[in-house]
Length: 285
Length: 161
Image (cartoon, rainbow over all chains, first blue to last red; front, side, top):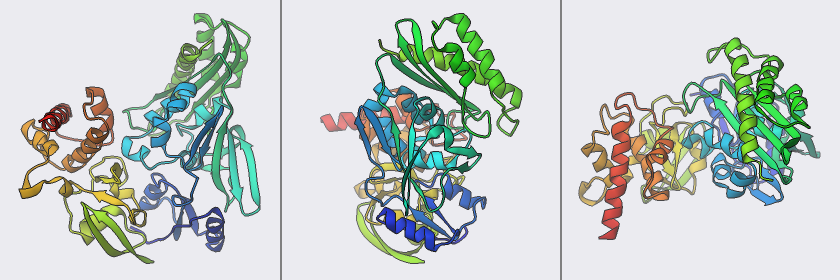
């Protein structure tokens, strides 16, 4: 394996300074389940890793209506958090299905987002929940909506030496339900397609709808035409079929080793429809 | 760069000077000659290298060795009881045909150990979920799941006695 230095700063300032001194030859690492694997595959060439695991507070999960996740919150901890399972089921489901237990035991939500795979399982739930991402750098903090965070496969708004330090999900309102679905070859595979839905219901009428899908475009997508179709209406069988058709038209998938563009287009529609139906079941009003 | 790492390995305090690019798997196999832990894919997919760090299963092939400083590591060698008596999980794998070629077995058993520590009487689905990161090319998994369920019963029966 290629040799590399491994730094373990204890504070954000120490991390910024270290990364600055490395002048582009370093990379931050949290759980390492993407970064270390890419280093081993020689897909990533750096001289040094700067570990974020030792920085106090970055792994915290807090709930006061709104949900705050530290950038280094472990999937293991998110999966076992009862408030998240109850109030943010789409996120709970995505995290429980992600990779395998050994990976979830060390991988972090911030790492999943910064890796910026179009198939990142955390992205669709966070998109439908209107999550806000906090980035911190030597010159201060900035908050960015997750919708503008991804720039392309592997590319995000993060500018070195910034660190993704937190994710905030607004409190849910009464009548909210959400769900996540994923289609892969076997359970621990990267998704061929994934999708999340969130609805806020007032009786039978959908006040607010959010739909998103991953692995069907260069970045995880909001399905805005579908959302428009659903808001203000009763969600019945015919509407769900309309959503499936619209979602299939809204995505722009590619053919690769995991699937074909045609199949992904079809499945994006199916998953959008089913996720919406599931979100409806989770909604309590 | 090098660093002296001190950690608890199978119940014993150890320390060794390790290079920064080494993964925990290499440290266990090359520095401490604990070759029970296997390297399968080397990429965190197959689980053959699973060990427990502070009781939690991780893929040691992608676990940076520097992160183990001050922690506690348990490998398959650490499960053996006094007088070389097999751990109940190991014994159950032997009794139920959970071992065929044996390459995945140390990882399977470490994932099973972590499961039974957290969930002493798991359901079939809980066993399957806990072992989702451990691939086996031989058994078809049925005997492995049987082994874990049987070990769970044995351990609980021993506790009651």
